[in-house]
Structures are given as structure tokens and as C-alpha cells.
Image (cartoon, rainbow, N blue to C red):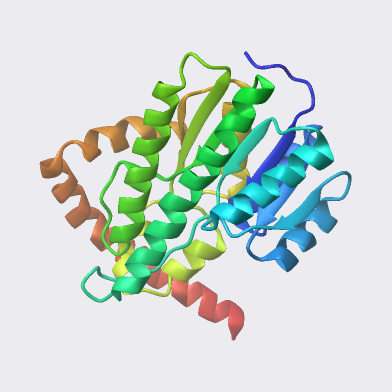
Length: 275
């Protein structure tokens, strides 16, 4: 078990969604939180709403130079870092054949190489100080191929593999590793997905709240869980489907119909609220 003492967290993608919810919960739990986002104004707004010792800074996770600058600043200003949460991500929806190549590349650069750069920048600093925790907010698509966001799923597959491979390489060091896979979550990203018919499958189940996911992330870090799912009960099914193409095909055909109906109802409800 990890210590319950106050720690310093750096959370990427904290201007909205899961990152913002996690920043709030971590602060309420007594931790010092640094919110990092390419949207600095959004991160500052979230930090101001949380209050306390929460601060914000700008960070393009695709830039190795910015990672080094940010981490150097954190060590200088706070004397070190206990937990890095790689949460930031983007999505470009649509059938793979219709998505421009530059958007596929943007997805891979942001959702895989961005967190990878962060982990590799923080790792030697964690080892030098004798402790540290690398936490990754991945996705259930990290185990499941997913239509409508093929390159997003590919990036999350790669991210899970890299995170766990790095954890295995560093298993005899003082650095801890945690990866969490949320299901569809009510965030600005899901709102964007709701605009695309190709994403109907994402709405077959009931999305969870950012706060629900954030609590699982925080608990998993505290308890030093290697891999977790949000919600936990979906983990076994996701793992089974991810290695069984025949079952995956059957599930996709069945749930696509359900998802299309739910997406239609979601759009109608939103239109009613806006009218």
C-alpha cells in the first residue's frame, strides 16, 4: 500500500472531463495538484474553481522540449513530483477510409507518442529522487478494436502495450505504474463523438461520469493497482472480446443497432433542451 500522505500530482488534459474531475478529487483528498493542458486558459479556469494550492500551466504533450521545461519547473518550484497522470487525448471520428491521413497521424502523435514522451521524461527524474508513480488514463478501446475511431483505438492499444512493457522493464525500481481503462464517459470528447453516425456503437451502453472515472483513477493510484477498469465489472468482458474476434463481431453487430437507437434518442433530447 502507498502512503496516504499528501503528494504532488501533475495531471495532463486537466482543462475538462476526466482530468478536471481528477484534479478536483485529488485536491479534496489533500494532494497538491498541477493541471497541465494545451488549453492554458481552460486549465487556469479549472484551477481557479478548485482553489487551494491547485495551479495550472500550459503543455503540448507532443513536444519533448515542453515536457522537459515543465518538469524542470515542477522540480524547481515544488521540490519534486510524486505522480504523473497522463490523461490528455484527442479524437477524430469517422470511418477510417474517410478520415484524412493527417488526422490519423495527429491521433497517434497525441494519444500515444504524447504520453510516451511524458513517461520517458519523468522516468529518470523519478528514479533519481527514489520514488514516483506513472499513471495512464487509457481506454477500453486499448483492448478492443473500435469502428468510427480506428486510429484512436490503435493509439490506445499501443499506449497500453508501451505502459505495461515499461512497467515490466522498471519492475525492480522504485517507480510505480498504474493504467486505467474507462468506458464511454460524459466528456467533451463524447459530445464530439455523438455528432458522428459512425460512433453509434459508443452509445450502446450507459456512459459514466468523469467523477466516477476520476475516483477509480485516484483509488487505483493510492492502492498501487497495476491495471483497472471503469467500471470494474466490464474488465473481464472487454479482455475476453479483445482476444476473440468471432465474439467481437457478434457483439458489434448486436450493439450497433442498440447504439444507433440510443444515439438517436440522445440527439432528440439535446435538441429538445436547446429549443
